[in-house]
Image (cartoon, rainbow, N blue to C red; front, side, top):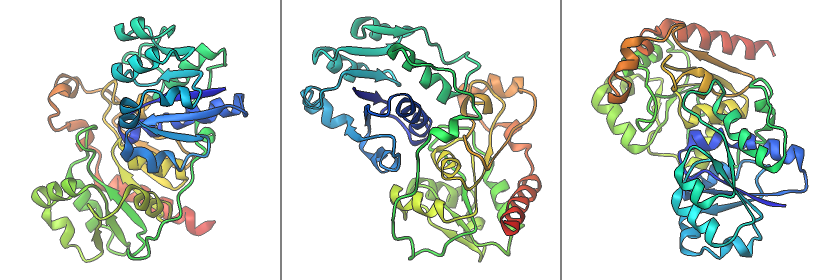
Length: 331
């Protein structure tokens, strides 16, 4: 059976869709899984051995007949996308699956799952797997078991031009997550002068860091790699480091899936909290305040600085990094 998973959005969300593909392959090993995404996510999807073919969203919009050429028999809307939903409908894909909580799916899907995400107690990756119930597959997977279904490995990429870091700091998230203060990242880097540290991010994010906390790039043991790496190179670099620290963003999930020590810093606000978006992996530590802050919840829509995430001290993160490195030395 040829099955297409549609999730044309950001890296972190795509990463949390990959266990869905792994779970599907585990149930139906002979199935052929297609992934519909934005072109910039292709390098990420190519690292997943559970996905057989990547289809670019813009290409499908221009060439709807590709669904028939690839004999797609089931089209699963992991992320609602009305434009591609209309294409799946017009090309008469036999099984079109979406959540019943979107009006567009009542118009374009012939199998609708009662799935509401915002107030659900389930993790995002578990919510994705719920959609496979439309195929008659079991959908109960524990958070502890999810990492085994990633099927994710780093590509072969030349990163020899860069000094391989011991620690990667990825401070920004393109505004998709609550971010730990840059001053905290500076204090953390300053407290670890014996480590090789790299700061990663897009060129735009690098410019923001230079504006808000220029002193971090002046530390002699810190290397600025913002805007210098392709996604393929970034994945390869992450695979060769020891520890990565970030907020809830794509590189955090990449590090977790690759099995390196991953420290994620989260707010306690629903639905941004660890229970919904926590990184999945066997060497993952997730930090957040134990109680949800009503003040932060009230300003969540305004993206104002989060006092709760800021209250996580650099010293605590430093101690966890040192503990991770000590573990590696003992192995």
